[in-house]
Amino acid sequence: MASTPRPRGHALTNFIAVIAATGGLLFGYDTGIISAALLQLTPQFQLTTESAEIVTSAVILGALIGCISAAPLSDKLGRRRTIIAAATLFLIGTVIVTFAHSVFVLTFARLILGLAIGASSQIVPIYIAEIAPPERRGSLVVAFQFAIAFGQLISFVTGYLLQDYSWRLMFGLGVIPAVILFVGMLFLPNSPRWLAMQGEFERAREVLRSVRKSDAEADQELQDIQDQHDEKAPLSEVFKPWVRPATIAAVGIALLCQLTGINAVMYYAPTIFADAGFGQSSALLTSVAVGVSMVGTVAFGGWAVDAWGRRTLMLRMIPGAVVSLVLLGFMFFTGQTHGWGAFVTAAAVVGYVVFNVGSLSVAIWLVGAEVFPLSCRGTGMSLVAASHWGADLIISLTTLSMVKALGAGGTFWLFAAVNALSFFFVLRYVPETRGRSLEQLEASLRDGTFAPIAREKAAAAK
Image 1: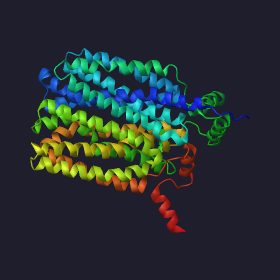
Image 2: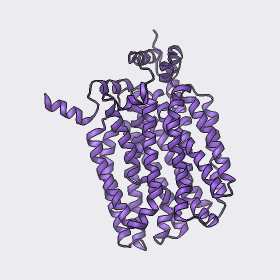
Image 3: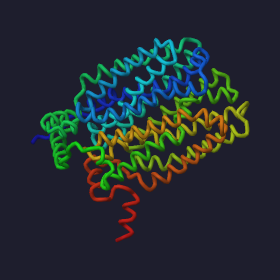
């Protein structure tokens, strides 16, 4: 069969990734804007610490439900239709939250937004990973995380610029990317691997030929997919011995991404800094600096996951997060957050964001979308997202209470210890997936050479 070079495939793949990743933009904006909005919501609705945590956490509870619900939908209806459904929920939730006049309605609206965020976190990385070529899969899937970081940056900038205006406008602006996602997905193809799992091989071939450099490359990839003989598997499949190493690696990163404290900083940074003596405007401006750092770091990570590798990136960056948190804890513990100390404190926060986001946050959705076999990829990614949002729910419900009990210094030291543990977890259980096709990763699960610790044992036995 003719092998005609097709540069258009490269551009089309980029376009698909950008439109799909708009779900990440909404994810980032809707989770980030609450930090600025809380400064207005608290006096208007007379929120206590506990009620502020509930309003903040409603979106996380919704995300937990949404990511679990998305798995059967994405396997039955397809990746594309599930993303369209998530965009619809984004639109509905944004309208309701913008016009909320009670804590109950506000919380309910954030729950709906959470459903959309959870569904997006489950399905968008899978959709991009199943369309992207192996050599570019890392950077294209990380586009989702970049969109999250960019969305959070926009939310921080918006919060700073609108600090003297209504919080309703802060929430209402989220309708713009929601419309882009909804309309854009109407024109994009379905996942070729999902089509193949449904037995629609010719349609899968058409999609692959439109996004690969040549017909021959597309046909070979489809043959590799067919050779795996994958059919939809039940939830129990992800816990079977042959798939378990993938589950440990992906779920472990998902849990550690939250338990290392990144969203505690994202959600409550303005509140923590305001309580430490920073003025409200300065606290919001510090959040903007955090957002800029995130965007820059994820952009770097998008390059590094394919140039260095996913595992290598995490092992190089996590130690920096530990050092930054130890310094941050010291500054708060000793009360040196004023004057020159304020600059050191802000630098430590930025350092932590750079090293933590540049490692675990860059890898979470990418590794989760890569390591599971096609037969249980939707279910596996749902478990990853549920672990992420479950841990996030715990963190968002307890951060302000932890700060009250341990002080900000003690809280940051606790997160430093968890970051240190994450380094050793990656070292033992997370394989390098760079440059390997999804089918090659599945083959390593079947022959027992997936995890680094397994390969070490095999080498020692020889």
